[in-house]
Amino acid sequence: MCKCNLVTCQVGEWGTWQGDISADSCGTQTRSKAVSSTHAHKYQENTCEGLATTCPDTPTESRKMCNCSYREDCSLLEWQGWQGDIPESGCARQIRHREYNNSIIYVQRDTCDGLTSCPVIKDETRTKCNCNKIICEWSNWFRESFDQETNCWTEMRVKNASSGFEKVVQMDNCNAIPSMCDMGLVERQKDFVPATFVQVGCFNDDQGSSKRKGVRPLPHLFKNLRDQITDWFNFDHILQGCANEARNLRQETSGRRIHSTLSSFYRQETSGRRIHINTQFLLQTKNLRYEYFGVQFFAECWGGKDPEGNEAYARDGLAAESKCWKGVGGQRTNMVYRVQDMPGCSDELDFTSSVSSGVGLKGKMPDRCSDELDFTSSVSSGVGLEGKMPDRCSDELDFTSSVSSGAVTRNHAVWCADQADQNQWITVDLKNPVKISGVGTQGGTKDSWVTLYSVEYSEEGEAWVPYKEETETAKTFAGNSDQFTLELYWLKQPLNARFLRFKPISWSSSDICMKIRVYGCT
Image (cartoon, rainbow, N blue to C red; front, side):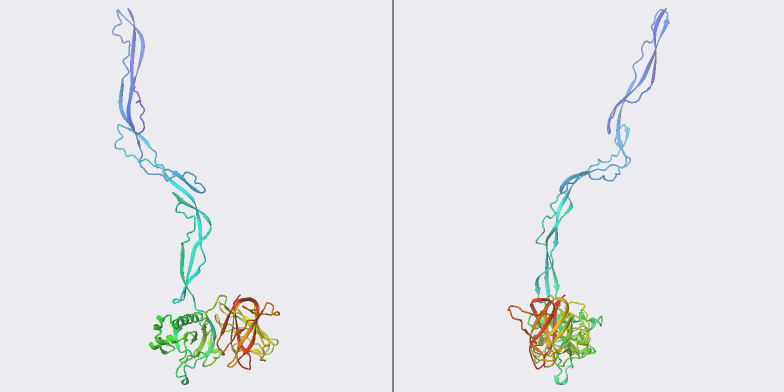
């Protein structure tokens, strides 16, 4: 009897595949079955042969396998913010990146062929700069040249004034950011200069009576603006239009040019009558002078000289004040103006008057720039009346006046002294200290006007200082040589004063009569 060793073997199921495979690559994996054994003794006669004493080797197998990455779609999330600080002044590199909307999943397959892969996401980079940009501002407009053909100034300005620096964000570099103002950056524009003018007075026009052989005081209708009347209480644009055209014609008649638009006035319709401007008139313009112009029938512009060469606007006499309205003449009436170059600070100052004897009467306010002197009056006995300021530039400003003797009459504000000697004067009170840049005078009556006079000024109306220029003696002003012409004088040394006194030195007849005007600005 033999005691034999006996092994009982048991083979299990296949185990898991073993062997790591990197992402998106292939490799070999193996697996095996587990074998277990049980040892025992067995008694057998004579021999132990035929009994299993060992178990067979563990069975194994292998395979090729791929670990493939995969996304269901390749949609991307938004870019993340730029990373990287930028210095206060200078440049730096920044970076940003983004992710796919879905995460990667891995699938194991015999091969990765046939799977669509998403492209690799590349980060973005940039160079960002904080640059110092100079702030350049335009200079004020200044006049460069004047075109007499168009009555326009060419104005120019240069962008060359620095007011500091500002931070400007710029990509890549600061090369394009200016650090200095460009002296060559220039702008130009045209600035039309309206004509300036002063009012002379309201005069009759008898329409060329038989004794005048059909010649009117201002014989030529050079512009008709009746279709431009929009407000019967404001004719400023009518007066300015007449003045501009009169200035143009005045330039033409000096030989510089013949105005092309005269042909547009060849035939004009005015209040039911035809005014025929023929080619002979165009030829005669060389001999005409449009220093004076009249506004008749509210918006007709008349001008020119009579054939005898006289300035005949006053030939038919002064018209009643009621025949002129808001600075323009009515029918058969001219409100006459003179084209006049006016310096800066040349508003016509209004005033009130007072007299030592006689009666001071209330005047009326001007209807527009450079209208006849408006004033209210105060008197040594009686009632002084208050005026008001005009509502636009180049008006004659308000003032009061006192006189040595005589009275300021209602008819066109004429002062006539009671006595005819060099002790007479008329004083104007401008109500407040103003800058006085000019004075003007006209004759008082048909035969009486002041030919020479002097001017004194005062701050308080008590101590008087004579106006002087180059010499130490008082300035003698040239006055008038007729009743109507307005003689202007612009002071070489403008005054700052409240009171101004006119003192006649010589006059044309046995009476001292004059009208006065004062120009300046408040």
